Amino acid sequence: MTEKYCIAVDMGGTNTRAALINSYGEVLTKIKEHTGTDPLATLNKLIGNLYSDNAAKVYGIGLAVAGIIDSDNGIVLWSPHIQKLKDVNLKTEIEKSFKTSVVIENDANAAAYGEKWAGTGKDYKNFVVLTLGTGIGGGIIIDNKLLPVAAEVGHMSINSGGAQCACGNIGCLELYASARAIIGNAVSALEKGDNSILKDFYNGNFYKITAEDIYKTALDGDMLARAVLREAGKNLGIGIANIINILSPDAVILTGGLVGAWNIYVEPAIQEASKRAFNELYARVKIIPSSLGDDAGVIGAAALIFKTPKTVK
Ligand SMILES: [Zn+2]
Image (cartoon, rainbow, N blue to C red; front, side, top):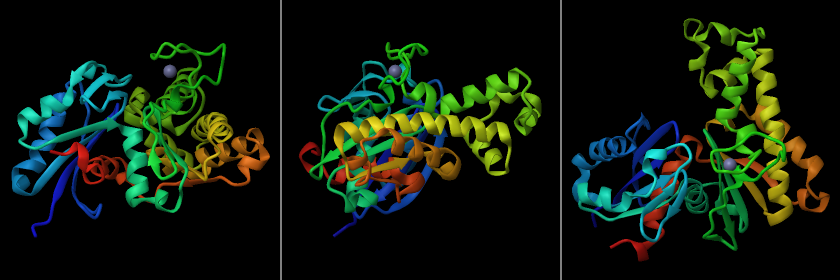
């Protein structure tokens, strides 16, 4: 029997990753582009690249997209960081270009699905996945099944007098704990003249710094970078405590680039969660990184194809 592949895409506010993945959850090829100002063109380019050499073996295309998704109809209802996709029927658009079926889901829901299929989540019956990137997303597995809800944990308010979020709420978690928040706080401190080696990045144009620049600088001991990450981590811990108190999961699994800064960003989050969550619930939860690393998003998108046969033609 010919091996079946799927093309899996993880589209976030900053980067879009695409991969060719087999039915065992193994990543065969992966490519990445900036999501850019024309997300549909980025999608077509990345998928086209993988599809052209493997068309006969491609069983389906799984799309994991940050935002509120009508997965039954394949529509992006709203994506805070990819606004051009508002009300776009991505399923129809992509099926037009590539002659195979397309499944679309919220990126964090897909990540939770991928964790259950091929990642750390295999060992847990009830868990929450947090995707820590430009924004913060959540996916919930209860009794080994994906809870079909929005799970927009990044938009729980942690500050009643806080900043206005693009979603309409005030003081949302992701305004204080995401990569975008970390960059924003670092840039504000640099504008005020705080000392840090980050001010020399990009020939002094520190507005270009990335979250990765900040955590690598923090690992090298830069005090400003460390302070910004620790503060964001502490705020993340408030969100995690709320999740523990509401859902009492067996595990909270963390994915996304920021997990690389575990000691400086996640440790303060764990500390804060331990102070705030119910002791009895905190005692039985594990706060752990995804074993899928950078591939968590695309494995989740692949799980949409290989684990949901009813939606595949
Ligand atoms: Zn919000």
